[in-house]
Image 1 (spheres, helix red, strand yellow):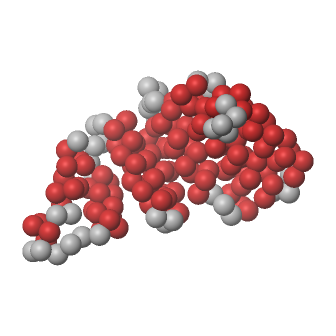
Image 2: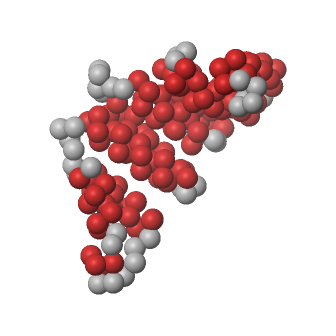
Length: 168
């Protein structure tokens, strides 16, 4: 809460002689603040890096998003007690940023990891389906069309089963 409060307070015009700060400015400030802090709280640090990565991803700034996701992933992988749902989200986040041909094998491996971590928990069904669809996209990009079609069918069947026909 202190981090988010500090970030929002930093962005106010009172902190900058009336000058308005943009979301991009606030994100960059937040990243700078995180880089040298929270070493004693790796789980929280990883969650905040993931949150900022998601913001950059939404802004279509893939390299910045990927960098933050990678930092978060490294922290989570080093923590035996890491939240598997967060680790799955971060793995999926990295996979989604890896669109170039050289990165497809890693993207597929990260999607597989995310799907495994999401498991069959109902609360993670929608995220698992998104990961499944990304897997099909990467397979298709890799020229594995038949396998991609099979994965898409499996994702659709899972969506129908878990979410119902009105939500699939």
